[in-house]
Image 1: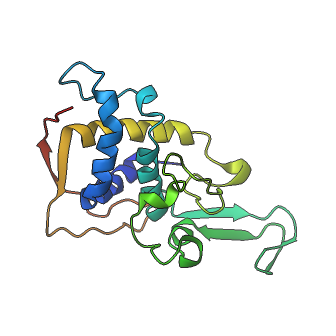
Image 2: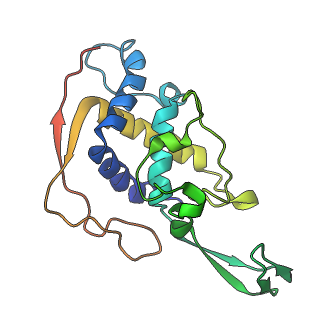
Image 3: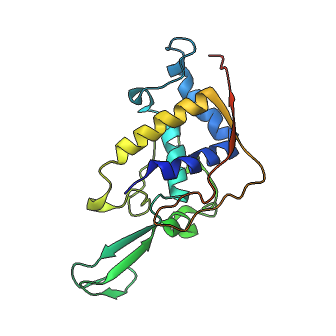
Length: 201
């Protein structure tokens, strides 16, 4: 099951480390904010729906830190995997979603880097198609999470409001590492300094 509470600390951690990404997201938000009553920094789901770079930034966090790092599958019928391995009905197959997300053969030499640009088309105007068996944060095929778009919508509205209204800085000296669990939580949580930012539109 997709859990937004596990993803949001990783999202804000990545954004705080990448000011260029934050700047691009704010540029996306600026035309929307200009139509609002001054001082209103909350964005509605319909307003953020078309924001391409914001979605790419969230996808990149989900690639590096999928909320469900491992998937368990049961084989329905005898078959041969693409790798050539034979499986029998009833066998259990464990899929490391986290490992797939950081494989150099699938994502390139910068596979460990946070780079939302990898999700964009050449002109940067839209998302390029990435098959679900490559990006498995929401599972794959007929088992893909039915709540995917709702989860993305909720995260987009939260991130948009925070990034527009505040500067977020990670407190130095803390240990940032994943917690070994069925969901990929941040082991010690995330301590940040949040500063209110008045934006000129």
